[in-house]
Length: 112
Length: 116
Image 1 (tube, chains in turn orange, red):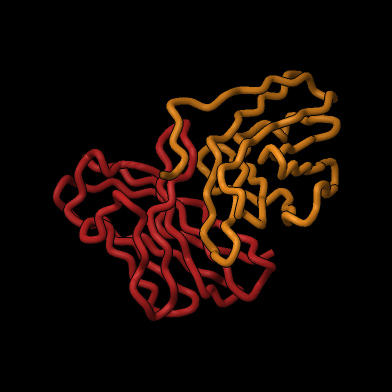
Image 2: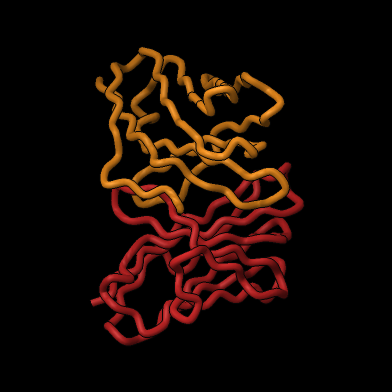
């Protein structure tokens, strides 16, 4: 079934520190993964993606790490800023489809 | 980046009425559109996958007669919540994928439905 949770886990980080948000995915056949950021009352925004033939990809201030052995994805945000406060979701796509399944999400709170 | 527009962004309706939500891809052709539902403090739940010109594929547990999806063109998909009830109140989000990127999903801003 689709991912449904009773509440979102929260990560609180001091401004300027690095943040690491984790995601466990379910399907070993997933070949493409995306991290999204969602601010309150808005739709998700694309942050960074990674294909299953890679284990690391870097963007501007963000890095995604993929460990296929344990089906784990992480998003690292360097020098976290107040504007990074949001809910972060990982999404996995099954190989050969356009169907994406979202993880439960993590709320990131940046403390001033 | 590609833009997906949703309308209306919020709507309030009376119980028993039907509500239509539009999802448009503004600068690319969306071969596939998805409709998600999101409850407060929860993740996005995929409701259905819609391909232009064909019937939508609904996820298990989603009532196709309740949530009517029409993908009449490569730039427009609509979700109609029929005979709405208060439990249908939710945040509905569409996304689209197409020729614009390597499988990346582009999301609309969402539509908040409140059924009184």
